[in-house]
Image (cartoon, rainbow, N blue to C red; front, side, top):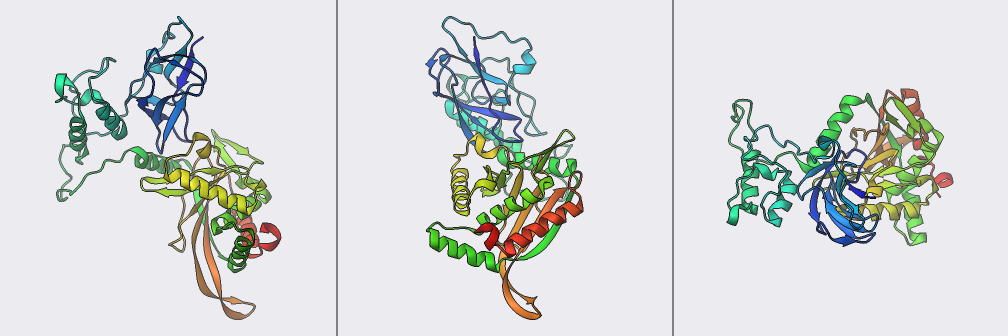
Length: 394
């Protein structure tokens, strides 16, 4: 029986991906575990492995955009024919319209292979361009890299409904279409704000003792303990005490979890990605620090797997250069913590003015699920843990 090779789901919000490269050809025999294709999702690349042995039949070409869980190919037994597609529209790879200014297609894409160089196909896949809309200039009517670049530049110029640059604007120096990871982030953030009732809460926390404890533990263990790890551990403890915060909202159903999976927002050149630390409630501070370092490294080098970014029940976003900010929810999660910089400030303590290490934390929660009293209870618990960390975090 034929085994489908499907477009994998590489993130909570992924709906489609691009087939960037086939490492095997139709008719090749592959073994279980062989890398057969590479795909590009909203935020990273991923190698698709064969789940069974068989003869490869390719259903989606390099450069095609395919819906999550739709087949990009099949693994066939000896002498077996590929499955008959009952509903062509259901399985046909879709092409995303990238700009409203797109010209009339130069030719119809009938499903036949479009003559093009491998480099042109890879570049078109990266830029999200449909090869069927490009005029070829290469030998024997093939599309080459230069054709893709020229088409991309033509698509980039901003135009209003009349096909002109908006009135009053000078000619732009450079045009970069909103696409790829940046496009995915924009879409997710807009949907987050439009589909949730977001309310934010701020609190200043004295982290002097937490910083002292962090430095002591780092020296004793030989493993650098970061403040991010301290906050992650403190959040796990607070989430276990206020379980309404460790939830997601899916189709008007609130799902509660005993397992605490905390996403750590990592900044990349293209935007943010949120790898997840699983079962934080069971980890030590050293283990959390190591996990944060490992996931950050994998994120910056494009080495994250789908398991690394799925399943988060809560998110922490650290911006160490501002006092405070309002983070945007990472749906379907119902809460996210924003962490500002650590700065020494004069405060009143026991009737005296003293200088302490202070940090502003901001909680954004979905008011559809989390009422103000619940959010405040969580923040107070978090404050208590971080200001008196010895009994909880030691």
